[in-house]
Image (cartoon, rainbow, N blue to C red):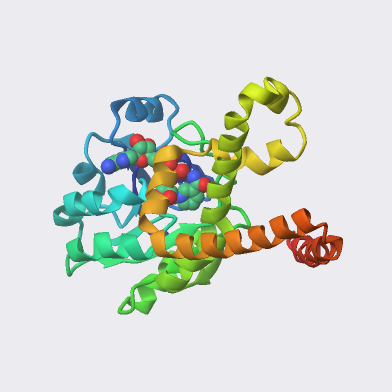
Length: 288
Ligand code: NAD
């Protein structure tokens, strides 16, 4: 099999980069996977658990000779990393990212892109509430969506190659424009995380009243509903700072719906509650 990219560089060695490395190895999709993370501790762990083939001491060193460079750092760090690696990219290199927000990544990265390399965004819609170099696993992307977000002037052949690479990693591919990506993700991912964080905050606020009951009885809805509130705070801070407009839009719609239900509860309007739950249950049951 001809390799799409012989050498892959992963910048950031957390859940997503680690899972990519293990999936690339599983599929024998590269000759060498080079990795770099900013923290010494992360680099040491990555070496200890053999997460990538070679861990190096700088992002610049990692990208030397790489055919594909993947930025797998928090969204707010993408621009700085791109600026640092830009002079060291080889002719024809493809740079992609896995950030949860796209327009702000484009804005941060594109001004630094050299003429001789290509930037194409990607966002694997897969994750867990765990983070760091030990959190990755090879099957994370299997049968999960990966949204590919090319800039308007992207070379189609390079976009096709990146899509083929993600398919080989195990993902299903869809193409999207950055603005639409950010709105869709605000609904299906970003706002739900915010609400989960908030629900844990509410429980914490009530602690003096409920004492240990929240933890003791949390096997029910609370535990399912708030699992994602254990996610990495740096990542989620950056998501909300960079996808501000779309999340505020969705949050506004969410509070409108919530207030309507709040009113129905206060006025004892069972029909409104029943109809709402019947309608939304049908939608939820349609999601596997
Ligand atoms: P993570 O916290 O597990 O890993 C992030 C890694 O980046 C760490 O190794 C950290 O040391 C490193 N890092 C941070 N700043 C850096 C810098 N300036 N230079 C080099 N390394 C740096 O996070 P993750 O879950 O792997 O997320 C990585 C990216 O993937 C984020 O942009 C996130 O939005 C996106 N993403 C996350 C999920 C998810 O569910 N966790 C899903 C899809 C996409």
